Length: 404
Image (tube, rainbow, N blue to C red; front, side, top):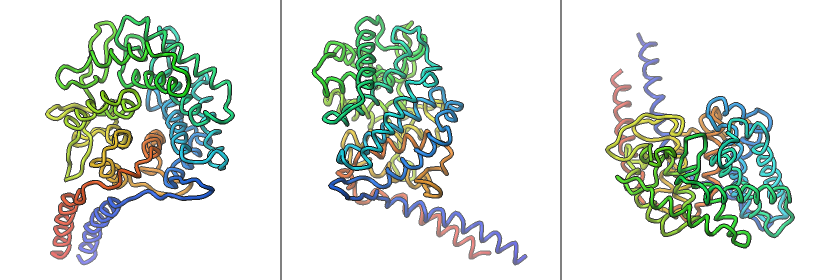
């Protein structure tokens, strides 16, 4: 009997340790290092070290393609974008800048390979569709912006110009509000990345695409969801209507790109995003997959939906908060994911949930790579409700252990 009681007490103390671990992680702050007149986030570098091993040596893109329709492209493009953002504050003569350049070019080559294009249709008005062209061109744009005053690979500039011309032509000739990613299927999140690529082109080089940019942006503004006033999730080109309502996964993504495109429209949409999708669970802010008072299940876009909270929506919200300068929610959401993502440094680099889902690590690296140093001061007592709840559970478990 004594052995059984001790065994029960052991299993009672395990959740106590877990609760304490989660509460400690709520105080997370990233580490920065200064060297050779450059300052960089060592936690992001550690994430990139893990991903570098995954994509080069463990076929992470191929593995993720077996789980997600765009797994190969998404894993590689997010990996490249994370390096691009990481390198923005590093001097060009620093070894890490050179490494970033090589990894971004490697990612571009992977995406432009036959394997990268394999699942996308070449019979669409925009060859290979909005998803492929949007993300591939945006990665090339970030590479060119990073090397604007340095030597750059001319083949990347040529490929970028070709894709931008294709997007421009598709926008101006399309009878539909949004460009298809697959035959008869369109997603606003894919289109917003196409638009961001044109905007970034005209910020780096002499403007060429103002007409397409204005036309495209006007389509977003005039095809809003009638119930929320927000940009929709999916669109039927055949019926020329929004079909998927509004979703947290796409809203977090859209609000990560809108500030680059149109600051006034971005501010309006971001306020609606917070109003309809920010929710509190046990006192911690999180992002719902469906608007308040709506219910729905998880799918390939959302990832798991747990207690109405979308995993993809909440992860990408880190980026959305940083891009929109949101102090109230940036750190609380980031640190909640840090706590419940169970990061570790076992092996090479930093990984989440034991490194089992490289695309999740790629999303987190891209979201963390956007500097949020000026957003590290949220409301003072944002953890208090969760801490009080944690204290109650711990005391209850201690009481159970004592009763034994």
